[in-house]
Each structure stands twice: as C-alpha cells, then as structure tokens.
Amino acid sequence: MRCTDRNDLRTLRARERKRQKANAILMLILFICLICLLAMILYRFVFRSHEIEITNPYDISDVCFGVMEQASSEGKAVPFTDGLCVTAEDVSADGVSLDYATAGAIMDLTNDDVLFAQNVHEQLYPASLTKIMTALVALKYGNLDDEIFIDEIALDIDPESSVCYLEYGDIYTLRQLIYGLLIASGNDAGNAIANHVGGSIDNFVAMMNQEAAEIGATNTHFSNAHGLQDENHYTTPYDIYLMFNEAMKYDVFTDAINKSSYVVTYKDSEGNQWERTWSATSYYFTGYAAAPEGISVYGGKTGTTDEAGACLSLLSKDDYGNSYFSIIMQSQTKDDLYSEMNELLSIAVKKQL
Image (cartoon, rainbow, N blue to C red; front, side, top):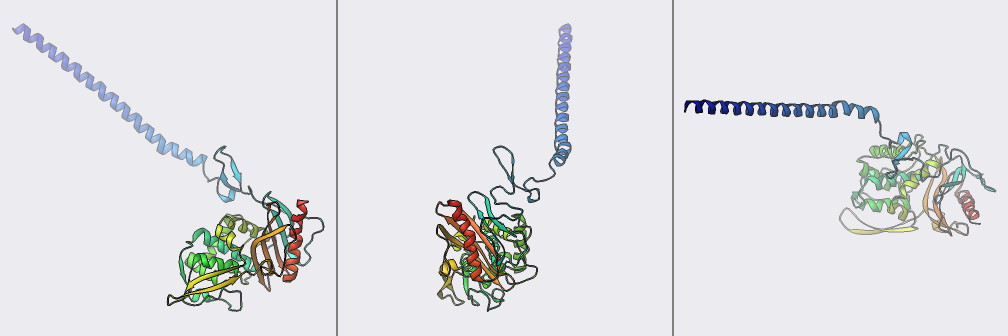
C-alpha cells in the first residue's frame, strides 16, 4: 500500500507540473498577443495618423485649387471650369461691336462656347443685376415657405427707387419676395430677404461675397443686397454670368425670370388678405423690344442707375433648343441697350445658318 501511495503521489505531482507548465505557456501566448495588439494600436493611431497628415494635407475640392469635385468612377479631378464658358480676353464676331455700352458678351450654354466678349472682366457697377446673387443666396440658404414680417429695415430704402411697394406689417413668404425681387426688381424686397435669411443685412452681404468667391466670381464685391450705388459695390459681366449660371440650378429662379407679371396674395398686419401684381421691367416682356427672328427670350434681369447705366442679363434659346446667356453693362440708354442686345442675339441666329 505504501508503494502504491508513493506512485500515486508522484503521478499527481507530475500532472500538476504539466498543468502549471501549460498554464504558463498559455499566459505567455496571451501576453505576446496583448503586446502585438498594443503595437498595432500604437502604429495605427500614432505613426500612421501622422503619415496621413503628411501625405494628404489639403482637400483637393477646395476652390483655391481650381477643382470643384472628383469624378468617382475614375478618381480624376474635375476642373473648376468644367461645364462653363471660359474666356480670358475679348472675343470678336463679324459685324458686331458695342458702341454704346462698355461691356457685353453672349455665350452658348449648350456648347460651353463664348461667341462674343467685350471687356467681360472689367469691374463695373451692376445696379440691380446684384439681385441675381441676392436670389441665389436666398434660394441656397433660405426656407421658401418662411413668412417674413415687413419692418422698418425692409423699408429703409429710397422710395423713388425700384420697389415692390411693401408696407409695414405686411407678411409675405420668402418665395413671394424672391418673385418680387426678380420680376419687379424690388429694392425693398431685397432688404427684407437679406435681413431674414442673413439675420441682418450686413451678414447677408457677407454671405453674398462668400458665395461669389466660392463660384469663382473673384472680381466682385457687394455692399448691399439690392444694387443701389456704392463705390465698393462692383462686379464684371463674366462674374454675373457665373452667378446667373449657378442660380439657374433653382426652379424658382428660372420660373421668376420667365414671368412678365406675378400676382401675389399676402396678409396685412391684421391678417387680412390682399392681392398685388408685380410687372417685369424687361422691354422684351413689356413689348417695347422684340428679339431677332429665330430667338426666344426666356427671361433675365435688368439694372439701371446713373452710375451703372442701363444693364441687362438675358437667357434665350434658338429654334434648335440651344440656350444662350447674354449680357450688356453700362449702356448709355435703354434704347441703346436693347438695340445692342439684339446685335448679340443675332450672333446666335447666324450660328444656326
């Protein structure tokens, strides 16, 4: 019995030593795995993160690099000018010259082609062409169904200037005021929109200047939302094209510039409903001017002050459905403006032949 007990004891001790050895090996393996895991974490979040910062220090879509987006299918950068009509200098056309205006252009939007350009990068006063940018910022950042109370800020405007005849206490939606801004060229509507969307007119003007920079309109600076004269308020015909091109992405804009009149139903301060009709300022819509045969005018924006002269930006189409943007700035008179605008539109007619 004693010999058997000793043998059993030795067996138990041997088994215990094997179990302890196995546990030690297991603990060593776990310790090694833990060390490896910590090393991976250290590499990923310390060394690898620094490498990412070094190899990708900027966003390629930043406007300062001239790239607006990246093509997802090929991973290639899409240039800022993709889909735009581009010119760095004047472009001539047979038999066409602007003798009564400082600057102007016509561009084939369908084929991204500049057909004529004169002084398109010269900084000029825009008058109410400003409202293209006002509408763009409002459409991009505002809620069209918001109700806007007309207050003293909206009415702080020269009553002899172009207005929508808003009155204190009236309530309009943002959508309605954008129509008044673009159709009747209401300076009071511009103030009301700016104060509501921007929280203040100054902040809204800052938003306008920021938007101009983002779309590449780098020769532009705004000081107000309506376009009344200010020495620090200027743009170029080409920058107006960029604004117009961007604004056409919004249905409300293209619909508003296409209307000869607009009947608006609004509320007064007591909640009573009233109607008012706003009429377009473009001679093409009032019947004082007619486009050349083969061209249909789809809308645009006018602008006139003593310093800016007579200005007009226009969207039109030919009989084949090709779209054109045309602009004249600082024309001497409105008659000269529309006469020379028809000269520009005639270039599109000749292009069809």
